[in-house]
Length: 102
Image (tube, rainbow, N blue to C red; front, side, top):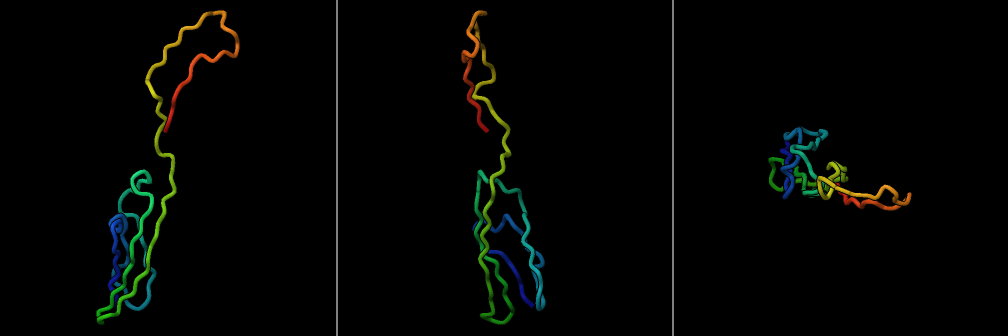
């Protein structure tokens, strides 16, 4: 019987199943809490399998890199822009520059 577990600074963001294995099994790593690229863009931790016999420990490194998704709505630098123009302004004249970011 093997006990399977994750170790590392960011391993709490993920869960594994099954956590106990007899012989051979597919171990699944799943997201446990929402991930945010702007907070953490990479996760490095270790997957361990520990048998009840001393020194029978196996491990593998796990590296997960998030791909940034544009999950923020566009924001303008100010909520209102007022512009006054003469009615005979030349066609093509720039009347306003607006800063926007997401």
